[in-house]
Structure formats: structure tokens, C-alpha cells
Image (cartoon, rainbow, N blue to C red; front, side):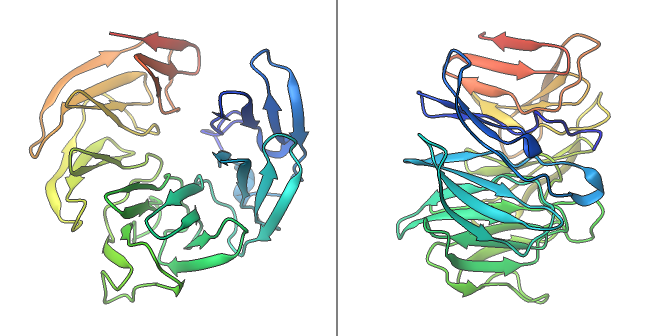
Length: 308
């Protein structure tokens, strides 16, 4: 895919090793000097249209988890984070997909949430399925997250008529899908079938869900009900957005593909404060990272560190 590369997956660290996944090249654990401590080879299964992989590894306690959804043999795997040894591997029915898995530590148990093409599944820490639901779009990229006891999952492929955003309650088991005439049930607190972005993840900040659409529109929802707070507002000066938005000191930041950042005021009404532009030859696809007081921005040409 034109937006994909062998560096699309985000590294993760436990403070001792850095875990980097390079698609069909494999998963590598490296120390802070860049020495490879162990590696896990990955079979190069075909992906839809040859688009490659993009699901990042995640850490939880002594394990690193990896999802590889492809056209032939999709799976979720757990590895020992110190040695790379396989602990378990679970086959998946879903085909090629690009969302990250998520560890949901709720009041009842700890779950591994894996959004997929058409269906989301939850697994326990031994790889056994707990629950699932259908109703996703045909491609899911956004990363799930939690707030105030609810799990938020979005799936907004631009080619589909349904682009849903869900809020899930803990404790589910079996198939919890809603029907075409429903928006909620015992474990799906609410669903909004037209709310989700494609590439960016949604952002929950100060009791509002901020939805940044790829084509440059920002809207907000009530996280408890899914109701619209304000509708789509156009962000100026960009051909598109792939990176996810972030928040800081009452402001919402939206980094576009042209290297510009639209800064909006957080609140119940839309207000564009200003726009910052990086170098003219910069192209921004990756979501910036926040580390302490540092904002780290990776573009196609440069890495920036912004402190104030």
C-alpha cells in the first residue's frame, strides 16, 4: 500500500528491551545499544492486495503479543518477552487487517481485544476466546481503548456504508452482536453506525470523543451515549489525515499528511485556534509520540522533538 512500509508497526519497550515488528521480516527484541537479543521469524503470508502488515506488538507482564491477520493463516501469538519462545498460538478466522490488539484490564478480568475484518474478538491470557461480535467494517485500522469502565472500538473503512463505533461493557461471553435494528444490548452499551474514522483512532478527552476523519473533518460524541455533541467541522489546508489526534492542556492536535498541525480548542463547540506547518517536503503518516515533556514527530524526511 502507498501508505504502508516495513516500519508501519510501532515499537514497544518495557524499559529493558525494545520490541520491533517488521512484518514478514519478523519480531526483534533489541537492547538500548541496538543489539538483537532475540528474534522471532514470521512466515510471509499474503495480505489483501499485497498491502503488507501494520499491527503493532503489545506487552503485558512477561509476554509480548502479536496479531498477524492475512489471507491464508491468521493468528494471535504470545511470546516470552525475555527469550522470544512461543507460549501459545491461536488461529483466527478473520482475513487481512491492520488494527492493533489491546489489553483490557477491567474490573472482572484481563482480556486481549483483537478487532478484525468484520468481527471483533476477545481472548483470555491463554488464547481462549471469551466473546465476539460482528458488525465491523471490512477493514479496521484504529486502536481500541478504555475509559470509565467502557471499551471503545471503531471501524471505519471508507468504502463501506457502515462505519461503526462501539462502547462495550465488561463481562461478556459468547456472541454479543447487535442486530440491524438495535444499537445496544446487555454488553454493547451503545453503537453509532456512521461515526468511525478509517485510519485515525478516536480520542477521548475531557468527557468527549473526538472523531478525526481522514478527509479532514472533526466531530465529537458523548462517550456515555454516542450522541453527537457537534457535527463535522472542516479542518483547512490538508489533503488528508492518517495520524491519530492527541490532546494537551485543553487543546486538540490534528497532524495532517502535509506536515501541518491543526490546533483546536477542546470543548462542546468547534474552535480552530491555529495551524502549525513543518518543512514543505515533510509528509506525516505516523501518530506523534509523547514522552514526558517531549513531543516526537516522525515524518518521511525527519524526526522532530518539540518541548514548548
